[in-house]
Structure formats: C-alpha cells, structure tokens
Amino acid sequence: IFLDTADTAVIEKHFSSGLIDGITTNPTLIMKSGRNPEDVYQELIDLGIPDISMEVVGSDEIMLAEGRRLVNKFGKDQATIKVPCTPDGLWVCKQLSRDLIKVNVTLIFDEAQAILAAKAGAKYVSPFVGRLDDNSIAGLDLIKRISNIYNKQNVYETEILSASIRYVNSVSQSFANGAN
Image 1: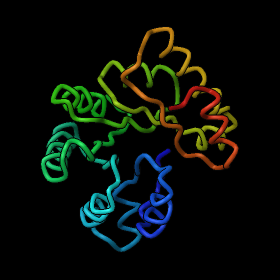
Image 2 (image 1 turned 90 degrees about the vertical axis):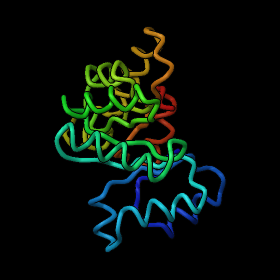
Image 3 (image 1 turned 180 degrees about the horizontal axis):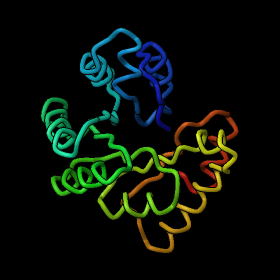
Image 4 (image 1 turned 180 degrees about the vertical axis):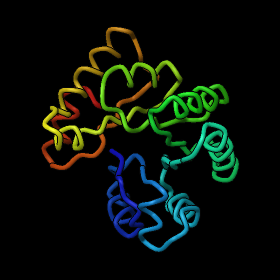
C-alpha cells in the first residue's frame, strides 16, 4: 500500500502503523504545500519510508538526467523514479531500468500502455482508476485486464499500483482484481 500525498504529518501517522509500503507523490503536490520536494524526500527517508516515487518531468534527456541525479542523491534502495507513460517516459524507463533503477510508470489508462511499460522495465505501473471512473470507464476492470495479461505473459517483475483511487472499497477491489 502506497500513500499518494506530500503531507509528511499524514505520512508519519500512517507509516507508524507498519502497513505502508511506500509513498508516491509529485513535485507540484509538494510545492502546493510550500515545501521543497527534495526536503520532503529527505524527511521521508529519515522516517524510514522504504520506497518513494519521485516524479521527473520534461523532455526525455531532462527526465533521464533528473532521475539519475535523484537516485544518486537519495539512493537506489528508496528512490523510485516516476515517469509518465509517454514515448519520452518509456524511453527514460528503459534507460533507467538498464541501470537497475526502479521506475514507476504513471498515467496508465489502458492495457497497451501497461504492456509497453513492463517491456521498458518498469518496477511499477500506475493505472489511474479514479480518473477512468470519472470518465465513465471502469477503472477497476483495467486492473483486472492488466493483471490477466501480466499473468498470461509471466510478467512478474512489474507490479500494478492502483492509482487515483477515490473510494475505500476500491482498495479491496483493486487487490481482488490483481493489483499488487
């Protein structure tokens, strides 16, 4: 279970339960809190958060350089680089995964994107369940379809993180549909 927030007080409260596996956030969310993203990442590392998705933006070369810089600064164990599922993001994923750097490919809206992300070496894919539901598309069904494809193709290296969840029951349904 990953929390999607930049509020370190909320993170600390819930992480102390022992049930949180990681954090995923983005620089925009952090800057809305008035904080520097790297200060927040360091605070999360100091709390002992084992896996922090750190989003990079820009062109392919900019995302690649920023991803490598973040991993060099915060370490391969805790830093997971979060990229969008775009041609540039998938290229960056492929480059980083060759260096054994964990990558979370976000903005997954269909199975084809999840297949490409896994092929590029993603550690995680993040299908946006809530955003799909907002547009009258069954987001939880996408989790099931991706899980079925990964199981049939023996894709065990890439985990499915059900993202943009709006309702508590979507968590249990995500697990039931094959999210990790």
